[in-house]
Length: 565
Image 1: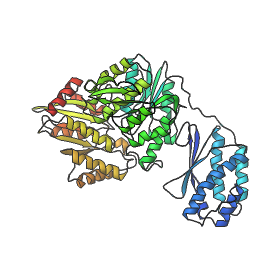
Image 2: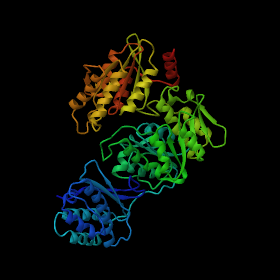
Image 3: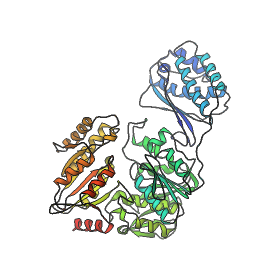
């Protein structure tokens, strides 16, 4: 059995290096359990003559193994003709697995290096470990070089957006602002590739292929790329740099996948995007999220923070450092510069995406989009017009806080459709549902979860839904089970709801059937929310077939005022 458990070719900037790299996951159990004398022989052979490996299967041996693997890679590289090679080695949650990464210039030879290192580790329990190192170096030297990296060097302005929540909405808003200024805009996100507002190719293009496709679109003058965690970890970023980066927030999502188990680790992955922003560019960072604001320590560009609080320490520190900030003052989106008066751009009530200032998350998305637009050199008046004209409807922002009015016996119900794929997203959905709820009416929620979340997170969705809504039902996402069964997801969601006193939660095979059941129960003035991930267009079609219409900003404002009254 080989010690090489996974080999990935990262095509561009990644968690380990700002350029293309190899990531190899290695099983070091043989080295961890080898006799001390054997470990010492290996250490001497690779130039660690004074190393003390420690006893087998101890924490000291584990630390030695990390150091030895890094040195082994460098030694094989040196003996095969590479004079200098940067190497990063990291432990994983499994004590016998480590990740080693190093930059590459020749694809096949770089992969052969990983295989050769694994061969040496396979030989460690034996007596010929010294010979194994030499054979590994000869194998690498004799291998074909292979292709060079194809990382794209942009020739047009690029705004790269990342974060746990809000990145799709924010990237759409930025693209809309640029189009408002007359630019031919290409952008990529989890829905597909767009050119000047038209879908060119459907699919999840939040990885490196999306960035490459956008820059290859005919006539494109301005690019907006949504960059997700998975793309960074599995393939790297497809561009050498960006001009403006945006990090919306970091919260619990996709933990337990690809070696990312904590929020701090997730933040480190997201930080790759601002880390490659060019020196003359801007990193737009959420000053209200400590993990995001901390990313200013890894950037080489200028900082531009956004915060709902103009007096926040993040705003003060950024301005003191010569950066800029976008915030809310007296209900206005305002830009702050060192040594200058605040510049009021637009009132929040005139920005449809903020839902009359109701949606805290969309206020933050608005601040981020305004910052990015100005940082990219778009005229102030154009940014203001773009914010005023971007709407929370299926045309401008499909699947994100879309409001509808649907007729029922005796009146109408308000329906809110949103992705709401994690805890923070569901809390935001319930927040806006409550904001349009009139006295004496109910909140009805269609819950759902995708299968690659942890048991804890799925159960937490059940808890949040049970606490926040008067009626709860489950609508399954058959296309996103991702290895789980429908019964397993139902159990976890119901257990979460039961922990907060909500029992007998019904379940429906599809999101459409769940919505239909909730609307059938709703009375005039009730608010129905649906976590919609798998059947967005079918949901829209159902609403239209039952006489529903998308709310205009004026209609939404009226709902908010009625709820406040």
